[in-house]
Image 1 (spheres, one colour):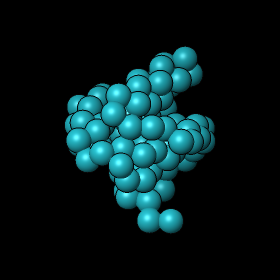
Image 2 (tube, one colour):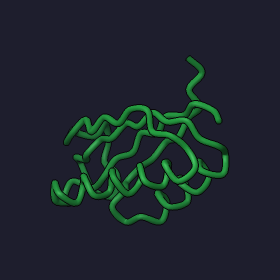
Image 3 (cartoon, one colour):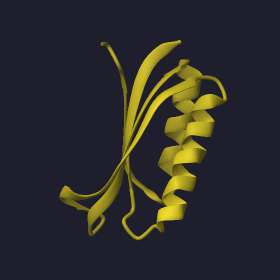
Image 4 (cartoon, helix red, strand yellow):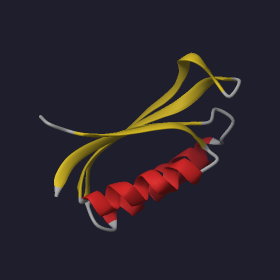
Length: 94
């Protein structure tokens, strides 16, 4: 297993309880074949530029260890989720 980190932005019109439910859902996908080491719900922040006519979003940063199959499945689920505006998964080299 390799170390990864994922940063994703959730739509600002999602309720706070649903934000936590999404974080738990994505962490569950990672835990299915990997291990979540750290989760930071940064909170609602202003975007640098408009994305789909949205100016704000809930930022979440997750550090985890997983195989490439888990990373591919997480990326697929995040891309088809309507609540997620943007996502970026990178390998942690440190």
